[in-house]
Amino acid sequence: MQDMGSKCSRDEQQCVTGSESLSQDTFIVREIEIESDDSDDMKAVAPPAKAEKLPHNYQAILKDADEDFDIDKYSSMPTELLYKQLEDGKYLIDKECGSNSFILYARQLLITWGEDTRYWHWYSVKETISSDADVDVAELEKVCWLEIHAKFDTTNLTPGALYQVAFVIKMDESCYGWDHPVNVRLRLPDGTIKQHKQNFRLKPKDEWIDIPVDEFTVTPQNTGEIDISMDEYEGGNWKSGLIIKAVTIQPKKHHNI
Image (tube, rainbow, N blue to C red; front, side, top):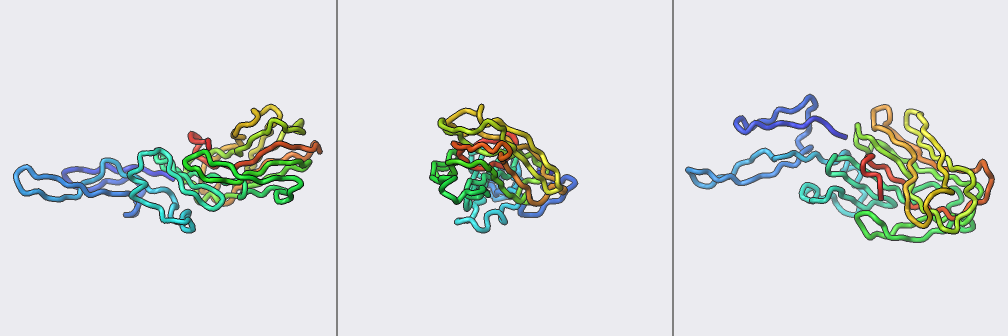
């Protein structure tokens, strides 16, 4: 979701843009006061030192949010990463590169047997990035058939950006049954499947960690729904102690929560 910048001539007060034209509301422009050396004070509109591109598709993303997106806050906030809490997820904006990011919490995932208390237990924890919100996590009591999916529409991602997808999990100290590797998979809208196996038995215990799934670039061919999944049922072992917090879809350099 980026394009070429623009240069402004101070003498001619006009902008020469790159090959792609931009709508008037694409950039935030501020008015500043200029004092004349030999006349009364006067006001003039001067080009900004640096034009700030608004986030891709932000109005559609936030149309159901509990409050409006504050454009003035976006332009003035010194923080590198802004966020907005959504239902069962979080929308983040990387101000440095202007890319959208998303966190899909466990309640937004499709977990086989996830509502059956014999197999999964739900409880709340504090969010760890940008807020103190409580989010629900799913703790595996026991299953022999592990299968979890997340669906997401890439039209809300920044065109041309490289994204990395990951599960955010924790392995309980008392976990067992992870003798067989877990398959993690990313299915893109064009039908491409990227997958590999992760050995959960060797993961650190009692801390939130990322399980990278794969990465992809947002292109016209990859516009549509992606499917992110993890599964393990070939071994037939009863498994326990896995805690699912979220799936992250973030620009590669900011892959953490």
